[in-house]
Length: 345
Ligand code: PHE
Image (tube, rainbow, N blue to C red; front, side):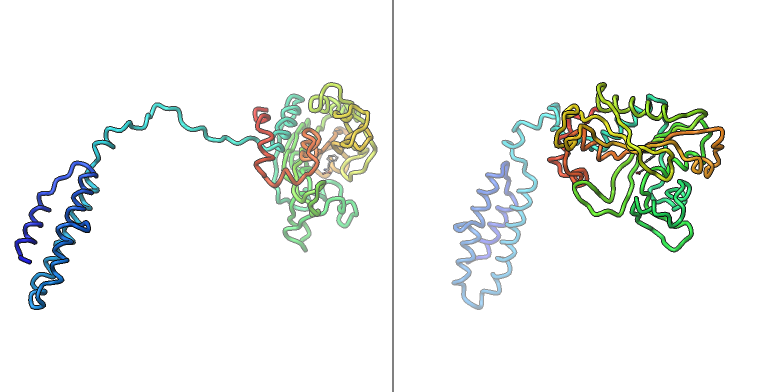
């Protein structure tokens, strides 16, 4: 082995020029491959006399390192002509479709109901989900410890206070806030999320959605209530729809009623959705109790009104014949995609 051998290869490396990745690979093989010149020098080094090993060992290692560096930097800097002349991405091509998703069935139903009542001249009112006892119960004629409170199992946020905070069990609380703030005549609907401490099943959930409505003016009668609900039911479920009212009880309305619509699936003949009765229950309603008007500072001798409230999941279940309420909360895309075509509603 001679010093010139190393210098010779160093010089070759210094002049090395490659135009393509293929040429770089060839150069790598020439210097560092199994039969490459540098590899050969390492072979030769094994036979060098021990006293000379010091002299050659270091320059040889430096040579190998240099060769690797040169090859590496060429690899990074050389742009293959073949690759450079390959067709480029066509930026004028239309982009990939981005899946837009669709409206949730509960939102679709809420929007439909809101639109119907807007046509009747109602405004939308909203209020807090964490409410106080006063607006959810007290002002609505539920005295403290009254058994009617058991109708709505409540999640309390702070207990042991005279006016504890709780998760609203109905959006009637928003109607109370509307009566406090607004001047009569009042026509509002209150869509929103409500909470009840109930075991989750196919027919009940601890969270659901309501739309409640309130109309207060002079001379509002039960006939107005009945007609408004009938018009609503026909807009919502079709022009042939009939309604029937059954006496009921709510602390904040007197008289109170529950409303059924004629089953739009079997048209009154009886099917498994209406359980053979021909009728489907959709909402609760009644004439606002004078105590409720007075609690919010409205003169009950001069004014009267009606209120109603309905569960959106229940209406969505009837509309799309879904038999398990839990589908609305699980957000399984296979379920939600069923409503894609309804998204323009
Ligand atoms: N707030 C009642 C409920 O949640 C529904 C209702 C509203 C009934 C208005 C009568 C009048 O069950």
